[in-house]
Image (cartoon, rainbow, N blue to C red; front, top):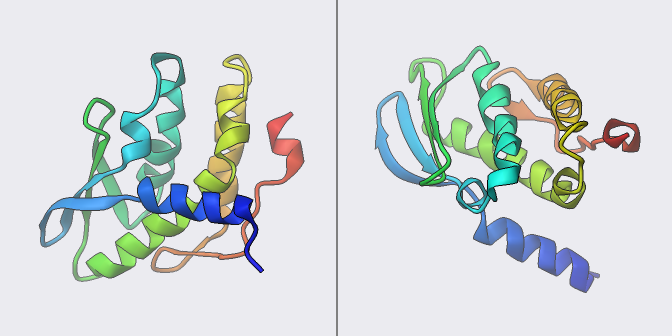
Amino acid sequence: MMTSTDLLADLRAWALRPTVVHRLPGRIRLRIPALARLQDGQRERAVVWRDLLGSLPDLDVTEVNLTTGSVLLNYDPAQLGEPDVLAYLNAVHRVVLRHWDRLAATPAARLPRVLRRVIRILRQATHHRLVLDATVRIPDDVWR
């Protein structure tokens, strides 16, 4: 049975999900509404996308634009298809949104360390061809 909290989380994920605004073979520009909604003091939270995606061997993040809330990705279309890239991004997005309140509440002084740990967990949960383990959880000790 779906609780009101689950429903709210699903609605938030749907409203803030990444969408393709432009595509060419091997290149996608995504709009990620959560990036554009970051307040000035929260802008460093965008490194989750930049550092995680930029660290994967199959993707190259060439631009993160916080004003428009967009990310430009390059990938090798001989190795990955656009559906693979989008499925991975949506999986990461769901994990980040599931923990967004804790991420938003993290004090600025602890944020770089917390983000590094979150990114490491997401990398470790990423398998060949950008498949994110659906059971990935960010443990409580990451936020301390």
